[in-house]
Length: 137
Image 1 (tube, rainbow, N blue to C red):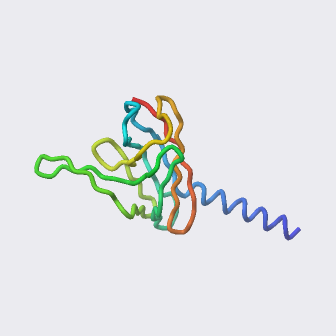
Image 2 (cartoon, rainbow, N blue to C red; image 1 turned 90 degrees about the vertical axis):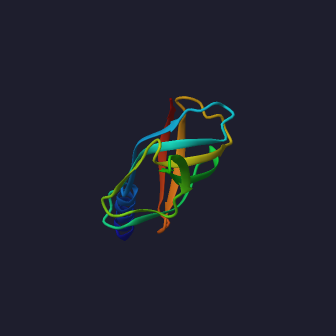
Image 3 (spheres, helix red, strand yellow; image 1 turned 30 degrees about the horizontal axis):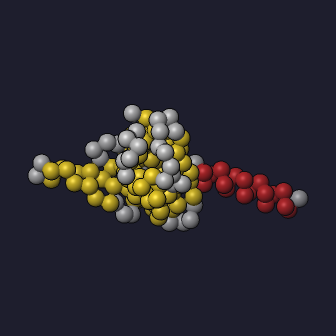
């Protein structure tokens, strides 16, 4: 009986954590086969009651994944690594072209149109979330 209650508690706790951080409309812009870097986009939302800080990001399809932001300074486009990425409770970050994006560096597999690419995010608490991006034009 005690084991059943413990298992139910773990299941419900895992379900709550799984929905705390959500990525919607995840996509990667298709690029020529020799491209060394690609960009991922989507809407990242914190559904929890606590601030979530992204500690690391990775994908089996890329050597390195970072959050970047494109800005325009004196008419010139600049890109900067964002660290840490912090989402307050209920906050949503929009990752879009010419703005904040996931910088996907050094692909180690062919990144072709319609491919589904997993991206894993680990938070400051050690929670792990796996999001899916679709490659499109």
